Structures are given as C-alpha cells and as structure tokens.
Length: 348
Figure 1 (cartoon, rainbow, N blue to C red):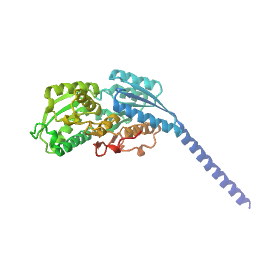
Figure 2 (figure 1 turned 60 degrees about the vertical axis):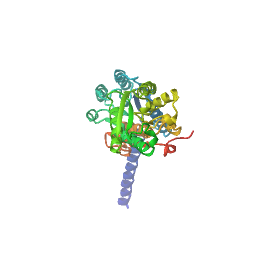
Figure 3 (figure 1 turned 135 degrees about the horizontal axis):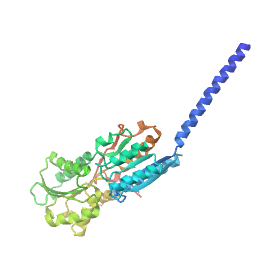
C-alpha cells in the first residue's frame, strides 16, 4: 500500500510538471502573437495610382489584423521621386523602431544604402512593385521582393492587341495590312518599361502580325505627361496611328484624354491598351474608351506583403505565403477586356 501511495505521488508530480510546461509554452506563444510589429513603408511616389490602390489594400489588411488582436503600427513615407530622400526615410524608420521595412524603390539599381542600413540594424526589408536587381536581393538573407513579372504583362498586352486587330479589320485605317503603332513608356531605362514595351511588340510579331513602329515616347507613368506626348504624336502621325501600347493605365488614360480633347470620336481612335487594371483603368474598359488592360493584382500583393512582414518579424508561417519561393512572391497577371471586365469591377 505504501509503495502504491508513493507511485501515485510521483505520477501526480509528473502530470503537474507537464501541465505547467504546457502553460508556459502557451504563454510564450501568446506573447509571440501579441508582439507589436512596427512596419515602415515608403513608396517612390504617393500620387501613383496603382500604388495608392495597393497601399489602401495594405492598410485595410492591417485593420483586419488589428481586429483579430494583432498589434501592428505602420509608418508611411513618400520619397517623391528622390532616392536620396528614400534612403534617409528608411534610416529614420529604423531609428524610430520599425522592425520590418517595405520599400518601393525610386531607383531599382541603387538599393545599396538601404540594404546596408537594414543589415546593420538586422531589420528585414521587403521590396515591392519596383524590382531590384537579383544580385542585390540575394546579398542578404532578410531581403524579399513582392510584385509580378513584367515580361508576362507585356506578353498579355500584346495578346490583347493582337486579338482585337485580327478580329476587327476596321482598325487597319490605311488598308495596308500593317499595324502602325506608338508606345507610351514609363521611365527611361526602367526595367518594367523596357520589358513591357519589348514583349508586347514581340508578341504581336509572334502572332503573325506585320508591325510598323511610328515612335516611342516617355511619359514617366504620368497621365498628364502622356496626354501631352499623345498630342504631339497625333499632330505628327494623325490617323496613321492604329495602336497605342501604354506601359500603365494612367498613360493609357492620358492618351484617351487627348483624343477626347481633340474631339476625335471613339470610332476613329486607335486600339489603346494599358497595364495594371487600376479602378479608373477598369472603368475606362467599361466605358469603351480603353480596349483592354492587364490586371496587376494589387490586393493580392498587398496581402502577401503584410503577411510576409509579419512572418519576417515573428519567424513563423513563411510556408503559408502564396507564390513564395524563399525570396520572391510574384503574382500572375490577368488579361482584361470587355469580355471579362465585370469580374474585376466592384460595384459600390
């Protein structure tokens, strides 16, 4: 009996130790969950339409996480087109206690100061939307990129234009069976501009279309600049322009603005195709002003960027991130035309 009594006490003690260990483990897990995450975010230009939409989705995601008990604060900055300013802002964010930084580079070829500053402070960096050079991203294990593949967007833009040209002979204004086109480009030397322009045209050629380039004109992603450049192109080439390829929706809308300003009817306008699928770009497809765009999933990218930031701080749930290969998260593009536009318009 005495032996059984001691055995019972030992069992009770072991069970108590297990319960206590479990409680300590749960407490530690709760502490990890409650750890405040301070995210610093800087964009190259706060007035960029696509980025404005992406940041709106990002902040909506932060609000949802907060409702679920996650403690997140966000410090937001705009570099206003200056890489020097952006470098200083990243340094300031780190000094203010941000434990993860999200950077939309002004100059994709010049992330060195940002990387070195973050490395010294051991603060992970998530680059987004404007992709840095691969060797720079690989230079430290706490650097990541969230965005999409510019090559894919160029191919899809070319496919949209090819399908319209081949199905509607009325766009061949001079009847020469050649597609005369102009390109409104983003920034000079910017990878996305170069890739989108090159592959949209190459796709037309691959589709068996004979193309004739009138001119390319740089409009720096801006609607106003695109309108001015389109006015110059219309003055120079007139009705010879049968296709306007635009590196983003804002420039496509600028081209449309100029045709409207010159009172040129929709029936006499060329094919105009954008990229990004912004809300205003999608509305232009609905209105029949824009023949198509390529949807860049800002909602998906914003959500992935937020949860990658949380994972980078907590060290957890990397395996739950979509399209994540350890360094990159790239979301697929989608072709948008009048045939599927209503799947991407959110009714108010």
